[in-house]
Amino acid sequence: MQAMPFEYDPVVYAIPFFLLTIACELFINWKERLNLYQTKDSFASIGMGLGSLVIDLLMKTLAFTAFLYLYQFRLFTIGWHWWSWALILFADDFTFYWHHRLSHEIRILWAAHVNHHSSQSFNLSTALRQSWAEQLYKFFWWMWLPLIGFDPLMMMMMMSISLIYQYWVHTELIRKLPAWIEFIFNTPSHHRVHHASNIRYLDQNHAGILIIWDRLFGTFSQENESEKPVYGITTNIETYNLFKIASHEFIAVWKDVKRAPGIANKLKYIFCSPGWSHDGPDLRARTLRKQLLEKEHQS
Image (cartoon, rainbow, N blue to C red; front, side, top):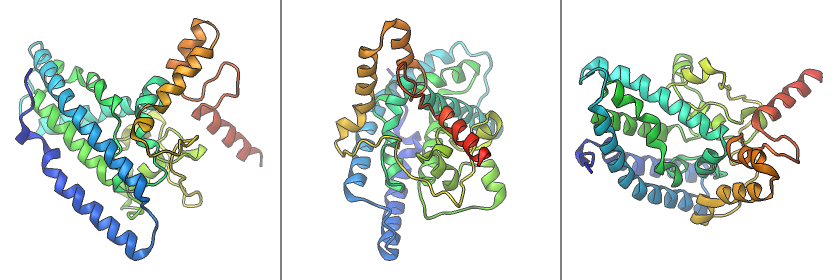
């Protein structure tokens, strides 16, 4: 196996930035008495981040080796040029959008991703609450990039740049940016919507860097000043135990699969959207949002 060279990983150089900005947000939170942080919750987020980092170190090595192998069969050699970075920005972000969106719309993938949404606070430490299970498979989504000719090292660097970008959008201190930025890029306002459990906001704004994919594929929702985001998941788990945070939805899936009659229903509990039920109300996000809009239209 060949590891990605340590000195080429932008995340390594971003760690001081992460620590400094969390310290700044903590200071503003204390000075303005904003109640943005809950101590146990923040430590849980940091703990999830450290666990994810350990898994990620191994998986990055495996992924980099796999990308190098696939790169031998590339259709083109794109190389390292200024325009290559523009291309890979769009290719990586497009891939991230679909990976992220399906992680909300397929329950077994949601079981891995839900960890990131389980905090009822929204601050820069929440960005560190990364999934453990997701690290085991997420690189498969990017395997098409070396096949069309992107250098694996460039790919890994771009993925790290995207991760760094997504860090700063986890804050309530930045309200709205200029309209052209809000139109093109993922911003704190857009990402507050993504982390909200309000029916209006469920499964919206899956952007990594560019919000254009949500606008194009119908998953964009504007933050409504009259409806403040309520953070967390629709049924909060009320725990700071790292192993429960990492596993609770997998356990719920298993329980539903066991009680479901027939193979078809068992498979639906695994692959349908969260909220699907064979014997209860339809609590899928798109169903709840449709019902909300119909109710508002009637009133």
